[in-house]
Image (cartoon, rainbow, N blue to C red; front, side, top):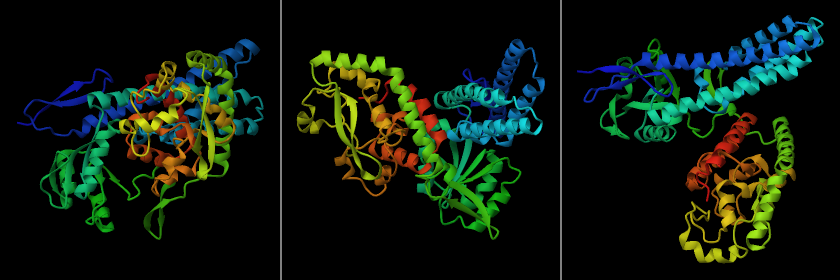
Length: 491
């Protein structure tokens, strides 16, 4: 007998379904929809709370200072923000927990609200709207962004630890492409996809430990019986345009969303756009932007933040320099030639964490290399000093690279700066890492650091090069602090 019973997750409070021992699980589309609605309600509530809190506080402060209520300014700003959020699809469930796009839409909505408030002030002759444009709207963002982040962490924890708040997925395609999708969903469980059924051309056997439910022609029927939330179509000669169109029609009314994996699996975000030409849906892939206005903004942001960072942590830099000097009386800094944008080399500066003759000893330790690919790394490197071990664990040895950012040779966020010898063994794809400036931090820093394999490191760097945006930079900088404080993957 097939049966499920409801349970409530202790972390999120979202309802989920468990299956009794020995029972066959029946995917429940209603339970998935329920937690999605509840999570969306939390997001809307938090955004509304941030908006009303900031505006009410500002209104009371202005009333106390000037005696004028500014009711129209406050209500107009609140309406502008709360209308801009849904207009920019910042409350769409499709972006919840899925990377920088969620924050990008939130930022775009707040910018639109600021512009609307400014134009309304000009239109109605209320020229005293500057505080509402330049202080109130940014303040809402400063509260809403951390709230979104906390909600995302709760959602990711539920997915990674408890296996709840997942979207049941039906995967359909060639065996190898379906297997790749299954492995990705298991590796990145925080995305919330759980492949629970598979359809292949043969219609028999299993893929990645998941039983094949039927043939590719049976996908729609299987979805109706199983109640899957997503149908992920992967590459297979079976999927002609006519068959994909027919599948989309057959899935109408099932509540399932059709997702077609493009051939360019590593390209996503703002570079991909779907448009109709001559009645045909075409996937447009724009060239990665390595210059232009956004790049200028990134340059200004990098140098401004690096300058402020150096001023803020100058006492810490001085303390570290003194400790290194007292440890073995050697030089404080270690300079090493690295490869930057377009293959140009530069001298990268770090705090010295090893003995003075570390480079000469390196050849004697090659057999103990724990690094991936052309990288040389050792988990217990005998060349590291006592002070250096602490600096490496919390990435404090990399702080002097802020001076490289100030000089324009590095960026705050980017691929890892490679050694010239490493680049000699780069294959064509890996050399695309050199299209942008190397970074003080990057996707590699917040995704495992030295614990990553060489292929994983290259894939993350290429993902950044292909899909970089200012929103992605902000997300990486936000996550870097947590990765550094945890010390995971640093040696």
